[in-house]
Image (cartoon, rainbow, N blue to C red; front, top):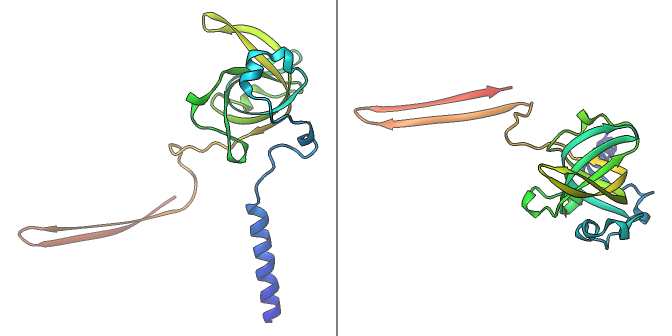
Length: 184
């Protein structure tokens, strides 16, 4: 029976380790094509001279809209941190760009504020309105789009919680109290 327990323990440990392994952001098939030496500010300054390069960029979705030839996503570039996750600090952004998803992508699935990591091929620059001025957006053709899960401390997460509280007062007498709460 102890051999069975040892096997079960190893099986559970293996499943837990597999579940904890990091998810690959850039697919293996695309990784050899990625140029990690080119910086976003270089592409922003001269998209034409970087045409055809495949880059990995961290971003926050500003808006998305359907076009005849795909879905155009306007993104705020954010530096990548550990795990190729976009920074939370918008002040570190170096600008905006467009990403063109050539297959159908419902704009409702990439809502404003969603953080994404994009593997894309530099295509060209496109001029569009940004408030009252013309803005030159570098454009990337999406090869791979990784949508980051939303983490918000303001959102109530489903689950079980337990709270313990108590109190004590001193005055004309001794008073104490305590309690136990469950929340769902």
